Image (cartoon, rainbow over all chains, first blue to last red; front, side, top):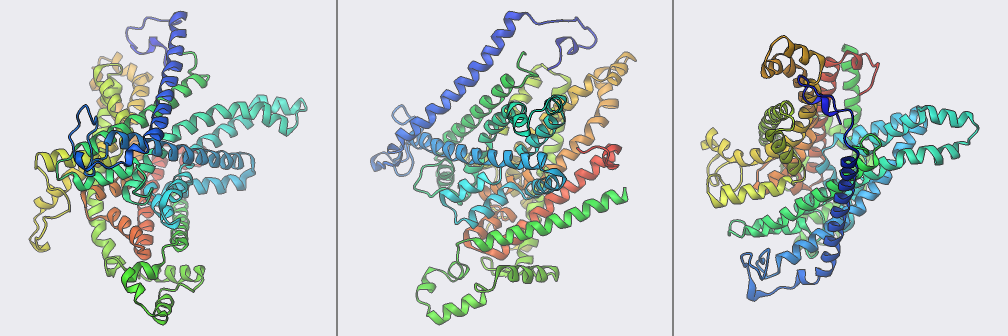
Length: 294
Length: 327
């Protein structure tokens, strides 16, 4: 962010511009990293769907095997291959997370628009709602909602979907407000553009990048919370291989020394969440005009 | 200042009322039948129709929801939180005992993660671009993506099962009378959950403090302090820390929600008898009174933290206190 000259305040050698070639390569690298991460995620999801059948096949001849070339992540107490289970579980978790986060982002967009464009009253109501939702600990809210919906797949998806909008709503509301107050919108109105025209030609291009970046950065949260709530026993039913299920089942076998049941699925979950983070932050760097040339 | 505080307290009361209504409404909307959930499957099947109706009447199945809410709220204001069905004791007693465990756990994690995160953030910010900075940043990015419950499982495997240094769960030794339990034993049981919570909590505060430290290091007053001949660390100690400490403390107060959320998961992993574990048990078992009370209690905790954070913001920045700018 800061010019290179300010990093060492006392020995400043002014660097007026970074060589052009380097700049282009950097931007390409950012895009390439983002795309690579996205492709890796797609591969995980597709592989997970393909492996879904293998993930539930029990083989009692191969119970509780330590990780070996045959079974990279080992097998569990029913002889199910943990690698297949982990990938299938990740795929489920990612899909639930994607669905829930997308719904959440659209709720955020709607509420932010209402707050920023609907006048003082509406703004006060939305701000109050944000405070309210941020005041209840996230996990407690998730528990309450999935309890109200009777647990299961829809319970967890809806719970994650209706609890992740507050922070994004705050960001989008500020963006829309800033756009509304800006000179170019005032000019457009003076030049006789209708409200709808202003919204389509000025507001949407202004807010859309922030919305997309915010949406992608919601995915990791949604996935983590899905795993957490499933781990606690409120989410997906035990017959679906999900990361939360795998980890909560592994708890019973920890004292038996079956460490691989928890270690690898957890690492895979962290890797997935970090991949989403990479996609989101690289996308932000490319889309955001302040940093796109760095 | 007085008006500022009163305004926030009124807001707090309104928000708490709303939370209790939401929690109550959600619990009432649940398809989990309180009668079936509480008498158990076997008893339900062998029960006569009249007995079922009588129980349904007793649990207020046919009373309209707003009437139940008003009754419940009135009872709560009189200090009666109802009876926990899972623990077969007054909700107030269950919460009082478990809140002690949870609050102790949270307080330790809160202080440790705050101090550690602050120190790491300052060092990383001062030595920006160095090895320490890179390590701290990598640590924070990995930890920000790590689920607290998985880290708990890992610690459990390594330190409790593998090395046997710490007990596998609970807050006191199994099979020992409550009166005989020593403080050292309680502390020994709390080490692993507290470390798990602290390690996860460090990330946010460290990254935030690092950003602030970088800003402070580039400020004119730090440049002047260096020009007067102070070493970097002297300048940081005299001029940097006081500028960094208050935002960090406010952030830490505002992050109580996350620490509570983390403690729910960690308590579940370590079978630690706290509020979080009780909330999970209550929700899985259809114990409406307990679940509702815990939801409101946790919200009160978080709002209390946010309130302190807001007031501290006002103390730091007079413009916010006067309502000239919003955060």
